[in-house]
Image (cartoon, rainbow, N blue to C red; front, side):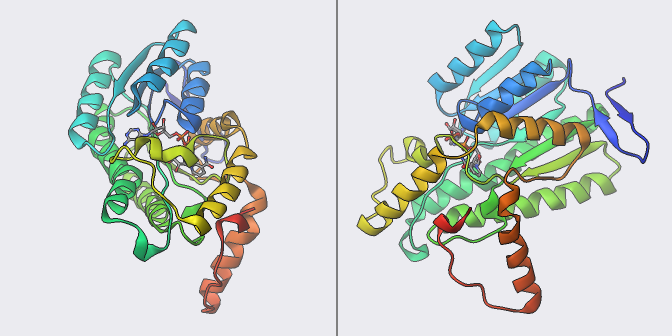
Length: 293
Ligand SMILES: NC(=O)c1ccc[n+]([C@@H]2O[C@H](COP(=O)([O-])OP(=O)(O)OC[C@H]3O[C@@H](n4cnc5c(N)ncnc54)[C@H](O)[C@@H]3O)[C@@H](O)[C@H]2O)c1
């Protein structure tokens, strides 16, 4: 086994070629771009998404390039389905080395107006599913004794608190905390498994069309005022960076064991300001999503 090598100063580099990457939400956006990037790096892939057609299309395109792909149409909120994915992945490929808990959805509105169903949905997909992914794969990864890496997709909304996005903010802050704790737990347990948390700003994907996977099968009516805000946010997403740029940053962070993956350096002052305000004990001023830039 020679999957990592040490550089001077104790840095490790994880070799990807011939190894196995698992990606949820692989049918679209950042997940699909990560699949393409890891395929280019010579990895085998286990992909999951709740949208059968989009997943099949991703898998077909990658197989045409000669990549070995296990594709499972599943809802990441279903822990048993992720357990089955882990079993199939280990049976077919003999392991899993890079686990990307990436599937995500967004929903908005004032905290008190968001329905119980929406809270359950966003928390289920964005947070509880990340725990399901970890519980299904990490014990097997540890038992294999092989080096590996876990990437959990949070957001710049995991480092800030823009208004009218409470379920999203809550889950993304939680994913940052979960990832940080996971990194400590793995490190203190002596496992050769690194952790990264992906905190992108605006990326050109279909995240603003998350309702397409809403459990009710319906589009959520945001009301007139929020619809205007939503239009502005849609514009930011349309003008966001290409997912392939994010995917390359993820690949580099995995190889070099970097925890924070921040795709938008121009957003750093916003995060610094928040951290300084916390230390100074200052109340946070209200912040609109359109102020994320
Ligand atoms: N696009 C952005 O600006 C942005 C910014 C920060 C963070 N993110 C995060 O990036 C991740 C990927 O989102 P994206 O931007 O590529 O959006 P996207 O909508 O293009 O892709 C998300 C994928 O997740 C899948 N998915 C949704 N619910 C699922 C479920 N229950 N089970 C399985 N799969 C499910 C969707 O079908 C889709 O293929 C999300 O976690 C999102 O919160 C996106």
